[in-house]
Image 1 (cartoon, protein in one colour):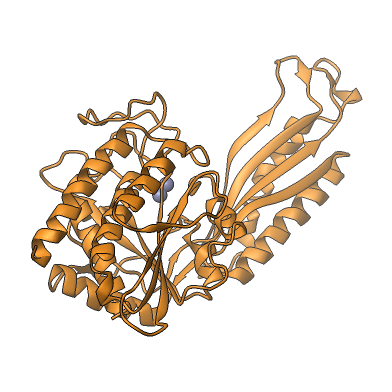
Image 2 (spheres, protein in one colour):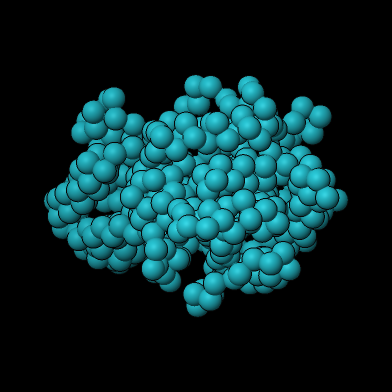
Length: 395
Ligand SMILES: [Zn+2]
Ligand SMILES: [Zn+2]
């Protein structure tokens, strides 16, 4: 079989797998069927599946056939879905009410499976090893950390880590590579304002956490407007504010939950400290107690410049010239690819895979949109660019 026909077959199989995954989306850490399908597919194409004791998520390994120790390359994609009701009307739309692959992770998973098959068939050309990371729980912010805890990078730390994310703002066949900063750090902040509840008619006998929480929410806006240098991108958003159960009852507690996103570790540390300082002092001024907990953090994602150049060359080899989008702005979104990247000493790249097609309506709406369609045509450039990079890096 010639190379082209071999690649075509891998792509066709990946298309079938993608539809299967899309029909049965699973939320983070509940990707049981998805994991089963990944493991089965890897085994069927002769890829070793590592036993790391993961509940969900999977890791495959391909050992190259060329003599010599060679490098270790990790390819990573995420596999989880979102709690969003799909509204695409695709023939293979989600059959699970309220859950869908609105972030394109079904494309990610299927592309890495297609790439696994292709590399498995061409393993004689590789010197070194490829780790195939199918990461659980990206949307829940903690899947990468869990995989690291299970020793995905033990005993050997990869020399490079590469993966992509679907990008509805780019056309199919185009790849975006952000040199340096690619996406932001993200920390989930929970603030508890503890007051003293009572009857709504007698606030004088209470310490009202709803009023204090509301004041605190506006004070916290000064972290970005007054304490942040204007040239340092940072966003602080509180998307959740809970307090009370009835209109005539002052509750004991109000809870605010939000996210802080930055491009640098120093800015991240300063702002988290500012949130803590303002919360404690502001609540104390009104006789309440404010506590801040920060969880599920991830550092900013900074792509390695040398690997960006190597990837650009591989993309050109795989897709031809003119397929790398220029001047792509970094994103204030986040991806816990950055946790894995940090564990690899920063030696890696996450690139953007275009998924917009003019002839496919709603393919450019955006990530996490119920109506956005990720066309299967994006699988071919996804598989070919991942595989080409591996073939070049381990040549
Ligand atoms: Zn997402
Ligand atoms: Zn995503």
